[in-house]
Amino acid sequence: MDSFRTPDARFDGLPDYPFEPHYVAIDAEAQLRVHYIDERPDPAEASGETVLLLHGEPTWSYLYRHIIPPLVAAGHRCVAPDLVGFGKSDKPADRFAYTYQAHVDWLRETVFDRLDLRDVTMVCHDWGGLLGLRLLAEHPDRFRRVVAMSTSLPTGDREPSGPLSIWLQLSQRANPFEAGAVVDRGTVTQLDPAVREAYNAPFPDERYLQGARQFPLLIPLTPYDDATVPNREAWSVLQALPLPFLYAHAESDWGVGEGRTTLRDGIPGAQEVVLENAGHFLQEDRGPALASVIADFIRSTSTTGKDS
Image 1 (cartoon, helix red, strand yellow):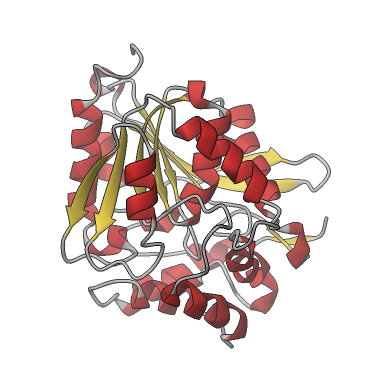
Image 2 (cartoon, rainbow, N blue to C red):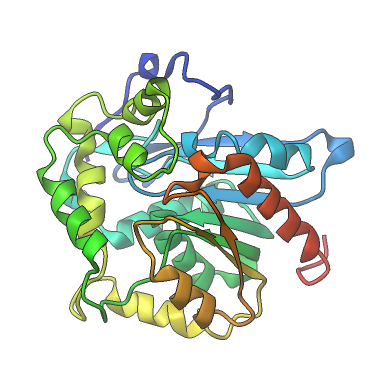
């Protein structure tokens, strides 16, 4: 499979992103390289918790730059991969190589087959939830708890909402497609120009954008979509899963709003917290506050998960 690799120079000098890069090779046939952050606390202060931070569309691990340091300071290992097609990970040139199932398989191979993550606290946002919740349903023994944000697990039973309809059009017609502008529109606060450019960094030109362009079209919108049946099967597991689950809802989220009700009401014992003055990309608007929410949830559920 032909793919593009964003030149390293594009990532030089990004604000607040001092993390050492790590890479794994996945998909022997496609020969893809996946980038991830792996930040660990001092062994004497380690809690034994592993936090898996999954980004969505059209972001990358840069989204969690203000979340990782406080969690590491609290004693937690933080792993934040860049999904295939995003960030420093390889970007297949063929747009149709990006399928919902391919993304699930790529993520599974990265975090389980290559990194062998276990007893995971999953923090998932946007498409990170559409993929991560599938992994949770298919491998529940790998997880301790979940914090979900601005996400859902659609099964093709609902017509697209107003914001989703707009996004479906915008994502295909925008020329140029600027990830930084998308993130800026999805925040309450105004992004610094350097931060906007950090979100643009993975995509030097249109050739690198095939995954970002394709993601919105993979959302199951009808009973005939490829992911409809697997997602319904995932729901049958999630609705009976006795795992601590928190939905962190951004007060001014313009997208994936139904996740607040479908996940909160569909997951047994799910809790909810509302972050005020935050938009869809709440990591940008309320990063330190969100880190505190995650750390508090880990602490409050440490006796209900598996033994460390």
